[in-house]
Length: 417
Image (cartoon, rainbow, N blue to C red; front, side, top):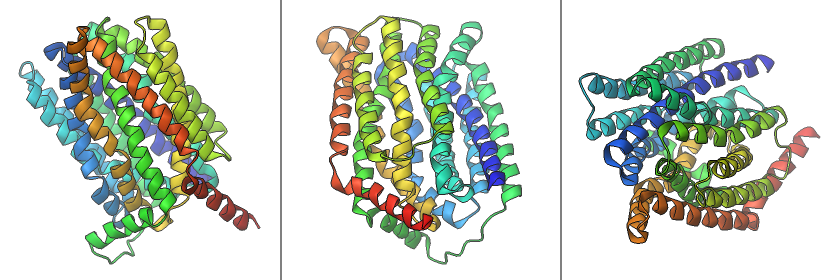
């Protein structure tokens, strides 16, 4: 199993590098659009269009992850998603890319990226034991934080000395690294022949049954969709809030300092992991994040903003780790791909609402208060953070969700006996 953990680490390293590249492009395009339009809604629309196709394709992508070679799907997803970035780059090389061309490019990338997440998540189950899940989840959270930790700082300085075309070229180069890592793991691990003769629709139904069959698991997924709604508001509006009184270089520093909290927690969880009290950890970590998110938007002092941002991100790996463990240990191994595709679709649907409405709300609040997009973003972030904290505290009181952890603990004790 040590050999499999090394394979996981190689795969993780590829995703870590890919996350940095994707973060560079996301940051750079966000700045580009904001400078062109001055609107939070325009930035939010780009985020929505980059996210929505992948969300809609999560369920069929999860079925594919159970029926075909998961490592091959990861290679195809990563490689082909680079076509969207390449399209934007070619448009910019011919002159300044129009906003609609950027939107088309991010949609192309999102469509193919949908193949990646369920296959990657299910591959972790293929490679590791239950005892290694928590540590692996900590490392995965750290890889996900790379787009917030390293990318904004790097992109901010690159934009100060060059332009967005250099950022897009670097992002395209990272796709080759990720494909190589997946190819090496695929050769060493091999692929499992699909034993599922069910139709595609029947396979999707099996994924639905795996999730909805346990009421606690299904309820946890539904509650998570509300959490992602308020998290999405923060994700969209933090940038226009900071840009309303600073520049892109300062924004990059703020995002990097803030996201370093996720790095610290990710390293801790990667070494120690979580052993117990997953529901309690989930509830408290999310409530703390909600309060920190609310306080993020109350001041223009960069030190205060960075402090609250750091604490917000520091709590998130604990919440993500707990969510992942509670779900992963309550899904049969042979249904992991299609179940995670469905879980991703339901739980992340909150992002769609956030991406679609948060920019519009912030612009409207800014006009009503006379404070512009910065003031509107600040008020919207504050309200969303308080809502997140309230929902988080409610999670710990839901009996069906607590039963998920109790069932997992009982199973572990039986296996040990």
